[in-house]
Image (tube, rainbow, N blue to C red):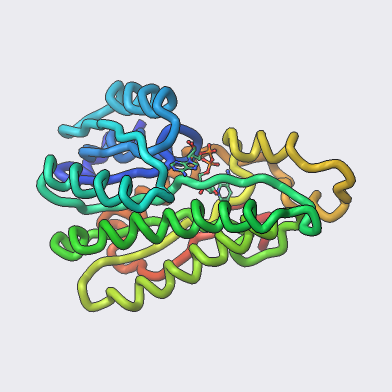
Length: 257
Ligand SMILES: NC(=O)c1ccc[n+]([C@@H]2O[C@H](COP(=O)([O-])OP(=O)(O)OC[C@H]3O[C@@H](n4cnc5c(N)ncnc54)[C@H](O)[C@@H]3O)[C@@H](O)[C@H]2O)c1
């Protein structure tokens, strides 16, 4: 575990923190001194993440949790406002909450399509919007969860890829729109990271899928770990990333080189 203090006295929110990359990011930032709020739908997972983060906290780092759906506008407003009121500001927002279900495009209901976009893109937008006034005050920054599907074809994931393409486009746009405020907005684009999301995807392809179209999505040299992504997020969100803005960093072991 890192003994760096890059996030000492920094106040951060991590969504999707009950699992996978969000959990690893929470642990990493708190281990480097962050005062963090972990947000997710899954309360049991949040409690476990917070306990893990507290166990390796250094430099005054600590974590608390809030149960909320990132797609619930009122809940997002309240979650951000309550945390900022309690801690006195906000330096970093990490938007990792999201979900994926593979479907045949012809069998994808409009309801499912819109639900994926509402959560993955809409929820990321809501947190960015609510956090922005506070981030401006402290020249903070945002790290969003894009995906290799933001830029490359991922068959049977039309809704997910559309939502993640939107996250990448929104990241570039916010970076430019808020350039003069000192707020930076970046994203990571993971691919093939071993988490419950990819485990569920691997076993969740619908019947009739042509696997020859999706073998390229599996990393040739093995799946990455959530910590591989958390380390990049920590770099982007810290002073080490001070001159990186509007960037989407691909973390896929080279599969989309
Ligand atoms: N694992 C990968 O290879 C990979 C690749 C590309 C992008 N991503 C993205 O990275 C992010 C993290 O993924 P992961 O692999 O750690 O997945 P994960 O399933 O382990 O974690 C996602 C978390 O988001 C939470 N969540 C889902 N919907 C929510 C909602 N409406 N409100 C609040 N929380 C919600 C889940 O409860 C879960 O804890 C996601 O946005 C995902 O799309 C992951």
